[in-house]
Length: 113
Image (tube, rainbow, N blue to C red; front, side, top):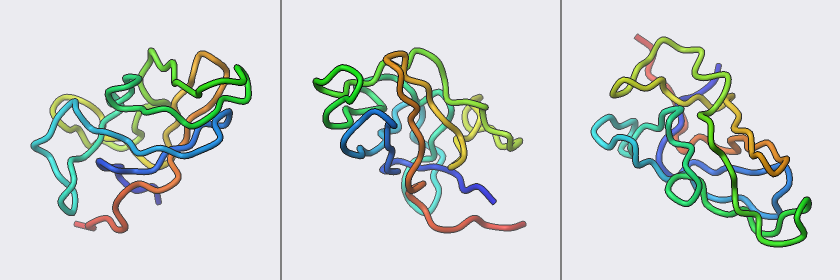
């Protein structure tokens, strides 16, 4: 079962040489185990998605180019401040050619109700 993603989740680009941490800035009031919960709208380069070391496509810095939200867009029905919750199985397309995935969601459990 996919987990919800939170501030500090570790991300990896398929063209990057190093992982980076997710920054949540779209909302800060909804939290999971302490950190702010991420949404599919947390996709802005520099604000949410930091560089991934060296880019194998450009042979230079791996600076993400991510104009669109995470896909497939949360398959859960959980809404956070009018945005769909980001899940550990969602992906983010970089227009340079890479695919960004979630290595660790930043939290280790879900609460079953």
